Length: 230
Image (tube, rainbow, N blue to C red):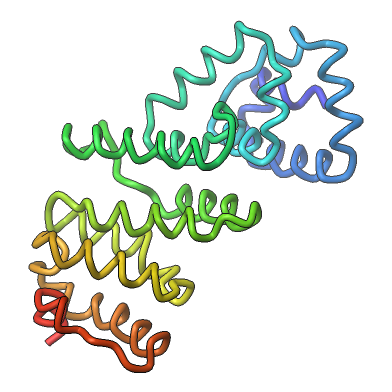
């Protein structure tokens, strides 16, 4: 259990192994390890908050609540330095729905500032983790809403290319009727999505899902979208 501290050089060299070990241990005896932390809160709050530790806390949000008030600001500072860490860090919010609204606000700010090497775009690994977290909590509609929001907010062709690959392509077959209507509405009003070269191929996948789900669908409202698939 001391591996959770992650302070030694040996631990730093084996972070992935330690992360997987922690997940395994907590999956077997979560209550027991929570009791251990409660008895030595300050000891277990002295953590090297590397990336995998953030992933761990997103699996077991109760651990974050148990840490002392010195540790939490350090964790939050690290999270806020990277939008991808913000994506998966729902443990410092009351619930996932509140987290979703927070992520939208931060995404809007990051989009306005401009994504670059110091402000990285959404990474597939992190978003997939977020997707799985929402799904495992029975919140498929909420995470699909994020997918639609992100892609529909694309601020340039390059962002739209990346966002389609990360938040639409892997999950489009999970979209239902109302999800698809929201997606088409957002595409229709954003030329950065329908005006790019790759839309011709990307949007055909969306249309294919629409045809499968609706059987018969009136595309007259979505002229920009339809032009993009021709």
